Image (cartoon, rainbow, N blue to C red; front, top):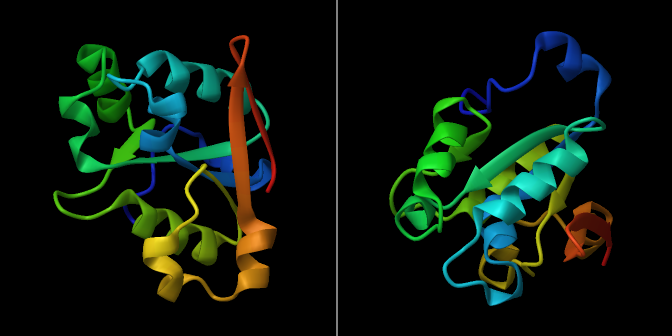
Length: 142
């Protein structure tokens, strides 16, 4: 898939397991308004040493995040991939998880995209929920 990030060296791609993250969901954790760039930074700091992080964001996050300059730098460096206008990040997240057989980290239940999910068992095996507690990002099987 040609739209994946260029944040990682080729060496890392072969060693670390891939994990796809719902960036918009992380930024809006606990219904944050506006969505917080700090949540995204905490998540990347926690996961980047152990995983090849594929961060996918909804196209409109850039217009409402609390630190658009920093967010833009993540986009320019390929740390986050933004969906095209009118395409939901959930669709790409599911497609990437299927293609790479990797975990999806989001608190979304994908009710609107159940037709894209291979099976309920597949969803249970690949979906991971997350929390940010005292500045630490944690994920777990739902």
